[in-house]
Length: 243
Image (cartoon, rainbow, N blue to C red; front, side, top):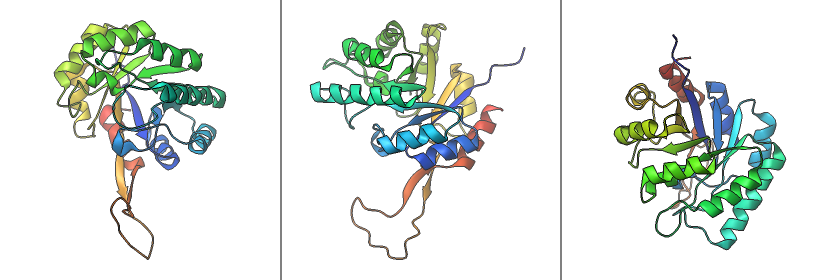
């Protein structure tokens, strides 16, 4: 019996990144911005154009800011508006996660976001990795009806957290998908899949893009280069996973 195809999700920090991911053979996009700070919700323009141009599944990160996952009323209302926008534009899913002050999944807020999403798919993101108990957070995501969770196994990278990820896969027992992400490359993705049993992996597949400006005036926080998902890097990941 042939092994099931492992799905490749790319965290795309721009429309150009999303299109490069599609070209390289990604199965799904998690569209975001500010990837260097863990990702935030992309602009309306980015989202609308991505929906028009992508043929693969488009999930959108719903996160109003960098930092922790404890949200106030203004942030809650912002996230609800963003979810409603995703539904109106015909996206395929949303990526959410919220915790209370004690590191427990904020189920009431997550239920509101899921209700606003309607029929859209839902991924619970790496808030799981900083929760009080990743196994408890996994059970909460299952109870909420999420399709999958994204995790590094509560480690700096997925390859460092392989044992925890494998444990989450076993605990999930097919009730929810477990997607491994953080530091995933073509060099380690094969080992990651073998040791964890995940059927979804998540990577940014990015490369540094040089500036084409003739005038360079560098100031702190204003470097001319930028990071973008690269079709060749995505393709290498796809090939390492098997087509």
